[in-house]
Image (cartoon, rainbow, N blue to C red; front, side, top):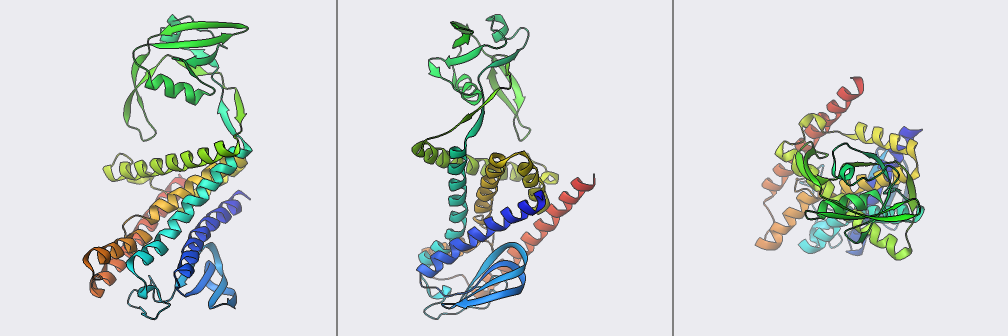
Length: 350
């Protein structure tokens, strides 16, 4: 069941991406010849207002085929009034950007939904104190609830980590112990730890771990919109940093995953609960948006670069260069897909 949910979610995200292209293309007066849900053999089609709406055999996403624009055959162009090629570079860029933008919009909406359902947070209650740590020397106790740090109110463990990380030499805590409110002064230690990418980083710690109590934080309408915007930005930064670390070699090539990894992780998230599934779906949607904006020929980002070139130099790239780069882009993407699938299979069977 989890695998079916995963495939449906991935398909919907790609469909949403293509719907972005479709809407803006129609607004720009470009004829969309085919809007297909799925790929491969067409099982059912309905022609309506110039567009053939189809359901195809392979239910993984979908595609739009605009008049005069075909990545599989880049030599096929049309300069009719209602074709993609007849539009200005800025209009074409708007059509191309609409797909990735739709993915960012979907993530934003999902995060708003999550905020209204409720976000699980770790309470700022101490569960363990390490010997000889700053917390140990300040005589903090298991069960103490941290109310504020340096005068800044904290409501979750994430708040606590951020405020301590931003603090100077000393940390002033207000804690609640039973019915008592106590004040404590600590001097954090600087320790070397590893981040999610395995890099060594220095951070401030006071030597405590959470007790593990959670609570559900719900947001008002305005707060949920703000939460959705911030989380979409944070997800984008996370994906971009991850890509940077791959280019730098910090993330090894064997860690690159493909569709099998996405399906597996999404299936696991579905078994945890709706909030985890929606959070992962939002992250994958942002990932699709960013990857499609990479300046690789055959992707939206590559086509945007071609149109920027035409906008700046007042002439389109030569057909020979355009076709060769497009085929090179397809070759790169196919190689990457085979490599990531190989990695996935190695992980599955090992």
